[in-house]
Image (tube, rainbow, N blue to C red; front, side):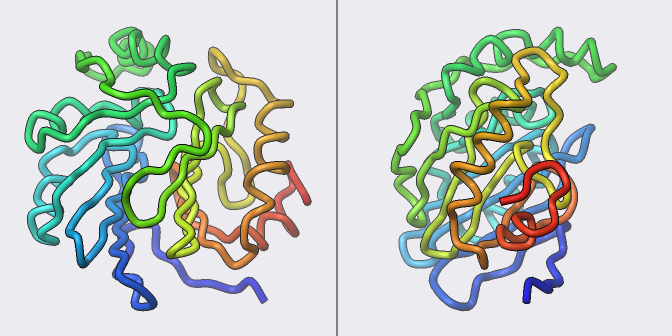
Length: 225
């Protein structure tokens, strides 16, 4: 019932509606960056630009999309490192949940911790809040703390797509042993927020292959429905 063949290297156009989705690994830790856009308005969101800014910008040009916001599931370095370059090139504002601002502000220390060349970032322009309309592709923000205090998932009802960041993985969940992590909170976020979504919804994870809500509810060894 929940069989699928989804490449985590690159997402292709959703033929059922006017949404374009592309997901591809970027940066030193191969975070999944997603571009999601509207074929009619040409508006797009860039989600988790963790590196390789040129690759992201070239794809936006190829798709003829205009970035209206750069949004982040959380503020670990591998999900944010190219945000400044994307903002400089497009003029789009940066969005982040305020509970992760402490991680954003210590990005240089994060880089040092993981042996990544240090990089400074501009301040976020806007705060993401729970239930926020993302203004593109029918997207809404869901505050899903646990991996970090300000972890956010993005639900796109039009295309039945969830961008889960490092909250939910195929057969696993995000680690909670880093600063701000909380195992009880991530379990609650998954069970009470993500598992209430459509079983057939695609879940684009922060790293590795995509999955489906129904599949994880039945088989995820960390959090079952």
